[in-house]
Each structure stands twice: as structure tokens, then as C-alpha cells.
Figure 1 (cartoon, rainbow, N blue to C red):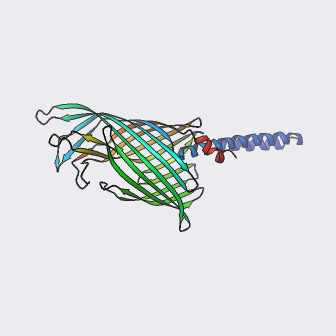
Figure 2: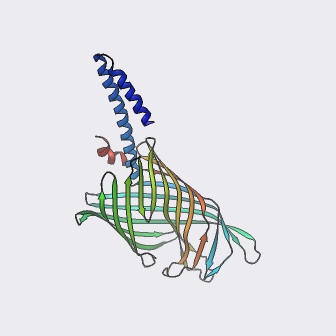
Figure 3: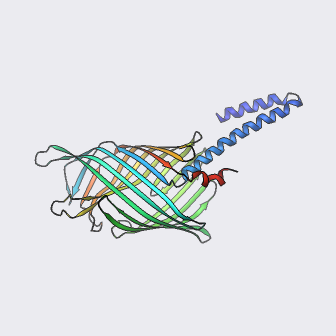
Length: 348
């Protein structure tokens, strides 16, 4: 379409150039209008792109997973195959800032997750399938501190968080998190950052984790967005206020359980699950403050384990091998500060 527009414009200019001098002003006027229209479209795309990249203060999403089968294992013994017939999740996040200076940011993050699922268990005595409905609630609150400095004459960002989480019954864990990131390259086409994550939690399996962030804008309007180990996406702005992405995202899911061991009724358990969501993401900017997000594709549950909360993660109490399934996710983000924050960069 752009090539056709340019050919039409070129033919129009050649035709008008053969007219009298009095028509030259009209030709320049029409050309200026076309440039203004193009600039408006570019500005709209740039505005939408900046909106998508910003941290979203308020976000709510609903997820549904298609039925899938899984096989539990305990003490090296494989148990009977079971089935999750329905799985729904509602998740809400809030990211707030109390202090924002040039080199210092202080804020807090609040997260809430509610899961409801129907499980089909095979009874060992009869071999019949029994369906049980479970509800799980998980919440976490973190106090976040960000400091911006320089190392080797390159920007360095230190993020630290103090996190407390739990369920609807109890607060369970107090954890610390620190991420140091150095900006190796940052220009209009490429952004490259490297860092390390330190997880201050005696029960964690990975206390240290290297991180790489790479963003590359391609000539065809597409962009590579790599954030290892979290995501690998190929993005593209579509229309004037939309963005479509293809690739893989890594997500962590978990909650606390109670009263599942008759021999130890007071024992608390923690369930942790690592998921890989492979598929397509579409985001659409509505007005100045809302972003609608839809995700769908194939979900692979890479790690699914149940641990006794008081023990370290040297040995799981139960391990689950799940088969891949399909998923759908619909979310909406609200940023009441978007217009104010983007005014300086958008309005020239």
C-alpha cells in the first residue's frame, strides 16, 4: 500500500508540474497535507508503542486452561493418571510509586491470584474417577527500591524488593530480591542489558540467576524482544493503536495448601509451577489510559512440584508431569498517569 501511495503521489506531482505557475501553491499545499497525515500516523504509532512499554500501575486478567491430564509421582513411584477438567484463574496487580527522583524510586507492588479447578482422581480401591473442586488464593506484597548509578561509565540499575506472601489463611514467607542490571548499549535501534538476580530465600532452588535483555528494531517495522529467561517475542505495531507479538513467555504460578496429609494435618505445603506459554499476544490501546490484552496458544507445564513448606527444596513431596494443553487469557490494564508521563515526549 505504501508503494502504491508513493506511485500515485509521484504521478500527481508530475501532472501538476506541467500546469501554470499559479497552481504550484496548490501542489505544495496538497503535499504538505499528505506529510501531515503521515506524521500524525507515525506519532500515533510512537505513542501506542511507548504506552505498551510502560509499567502498568493496575492490571486485571482472566485465564482459562483447556482440560489436560497429568501423572503424579511420589517417592519415585508413578501414581494413576488424573485429569484437570476445568481451570480458571483471576489475577490482579497494582504497581504504585511513593517517591520518584532522577536516581531514586521507591514503590510497592500488590498481587492477588484466585484459582478454581476441578480435578478428576482415580480411586485405587474401585478404579473409578472422582471429581473434586478446589479453590486456591495467593497474595503477595513487596516494597521496592530502585537506584540508578554508573559502573564503568555505563548506566547501572539496582532493584531491591522485600516480599511477603501468603494465602487467605496466613502470611507464609518473607523473602528478599535484588536485581543488578548494567546497560551495555542503548540507541534508537538496539538496547542491550545484562544483569544478575539474587533471590534471598533459603527455600529457593535458584538463589542466583543471570539475566539478559535485548531489544532490536528491524527495518520492516518489527521488533525482537528478548528478556531471558522470561520471554522471547517478535513484536509488530499494527493499525495505529495495536501491537501483535509471537513467541514464548515463562510464567510462575503457585499457592499454599493445607490439610492434605492425614498423618500430619498441621503440615503446610507450597505448590510451585513453571509454565511456558507459546502463542500469540494482541494488545490494543483504548483512549489514553486503557490497554486490552488477549493471549492464546499452547501451554506447557515444565515444572510442577509440591513441597513441605518448612523444608528446603532438596526433595519434593509430590512431583507432577502434565501434558501440554491450550490456554486463553484476557486482561485489561489501567494507567491513570499515562497522559501526564508521556506529554513531554509525545507533544513536540
